[in-house]
Structure formats: C-alpha cells, structure tokens
Length: 252
Image 1 (cartoon, rainbow, N blue to C red):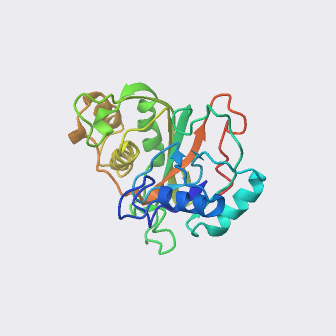
Image 2 (image 1 turned 30 degrees about the horizontal axis):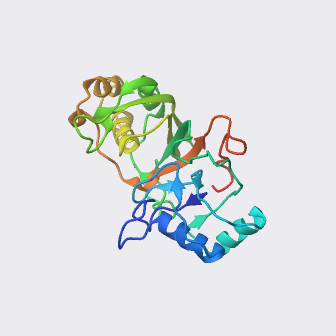
Image 3 (image 1 turned 60 degrees about the vertical axis):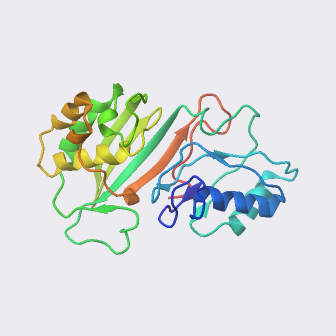
C-alpha cells in the first residue's frame, strides 16, 4: 500500500489525531462490517510517506480479494491506496515476519524551491556532492550500534542494527539516499541524512559519518531533518509467497 503522510500524525492510531491506521481500519470495517486491527511492517512517523508499506489484518471476508481491494480503494481517502491484496498464511505477521525494510530520502537540489515537490522532498539550493555522500554512507553497512543516529532511546535500549545496503545517487535535480536494514531506530534515517547533508555541502569531511557512528554520541550527528522527503519504499519477507518483495513501482 501507499500513502501521502503529510496530513497524518504517523501511521499508528492516536487519540484525537488523524492517522493512516485509523483510516484503514475505518475503511475495512465499512466494507466488511467487521472491526479489525491493522498491523504494519513499519509504524512510520508523522509526515513520512510510503510507496511499499505492507499491512495485515484478520477478516471473515468470503468473497474475492480483488473485490475487497477495489472496495477499499473506493472508500479510502485520496491520500491512501492499496496496491495489492491477497490472503496470507495464518502465521504471517507484517512486522515480525519482515526480513528487512528499505527507506529512501529525496532531496531536491535546485537553486529555487518547487511548490510542486515541497510535500515530498527536502529542498537544498547549494550543489550537493552526491559522490562524497555515497562514499561516506558506506561506513554504515554492516552490523553496528546506531545509537548516535537514534532519538529518545533509553540508555538500556538495544540500538544495534544490520544495514545491508546504502546508496546516494543523483537523478537529474533529485539526490536520493536509500538505506536497507533489518530494522530502524526512531529518526535514524532522518539523522543519517542530516549527517550526510553536512558532508555533501562540504561542512564536514567524508570520514565524519564513520566518526559519528563509532562515537555513539547523538551530539555528533547532523540534525533530524524534516520527515517530508522520507519514504518507506520496500519491505521484504523470507519465503512468504506473494510478499518476497514489494514492488515500489506500483504506486510512485
């Protein structure tokens, strides 16, 4: 599924606030006449978007899943859409069965800001050195303690994560940073990008990314940049038919 996270206070239900989960559960109950709880692979924060989110829910629906998919898209708000829906094994869990998540951050690197892109990309007018950013980000690949890039974790919280892939690529006027890991800490992606931007703008050396990682000191990392450029693009599952990969091209 996909959503524009701009009007929502994150994915997870919150009292008195609009959330993606609340809209989904309301739509499912309206169509199936059955209240149910939706579980997501990633509980994205306020303002974060998704083009490859995966959810699961339980229902006594007995008709074709294609009918349910069409019906949900007919009643969901324009900011949320279901790309594909199918029955899963009873043991499948959108969050705990996931092998990895992949997030992307988009940076519009132009002299003038764009009124069209402002909901979906961070604007930076100074020319970014995407190659230097890519080189710096490679130090994050592997199993490391990402405490320096976390936000608000308790002292005893487990902050070790396994990052399998990191890229920074320029595509025309857009600079895109993509990180795939087994799991992410709160604000981890946004602080990684904030640190990479300091390098891309020439304010920090390429080695700074590794220095921040090994320091485990939040004060050494770059700022937590706005959520608007962040997308959950893919969730992968081991050996689960139909969910081995989520096609991020379905709902770009």
